[in-house]
Image 1 (cartoon, rainbow, N blue to C red):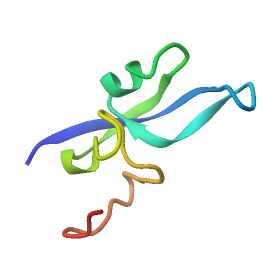
Image 2 (tube, rainbow, N blue to C red; image 1 turned 45 degrees about the vertical axis):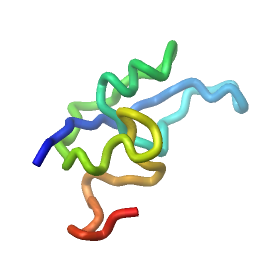
Image 3 (cartoon, helix red, strand yellow; image 1 turned 180 degrees about the vertical axis):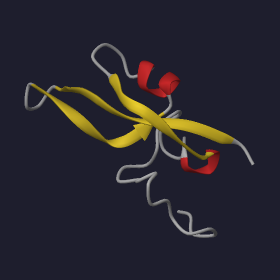
Image 4 (cartoon, rainbow, N blue to C red; image 1 turned 30 degrees about the horizontal axis):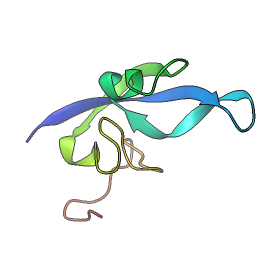
Length: 76
């Protein structure tokens, strides 16, 4: 079983012209790939690799909470 360390992150929201916390979590590489302004928050949490990269490489799906991951066998 592969493990990734994911971080909550903040990024610039062009629509509201503010910095906001993302609804996704990401690996450091995934966050860096977003471009200027994206910044990891905190120490990160280790999760099963199946929770990362489903929609966007290096990022979780929107709304994923690594503190309460889905039950085994429950995947999109």
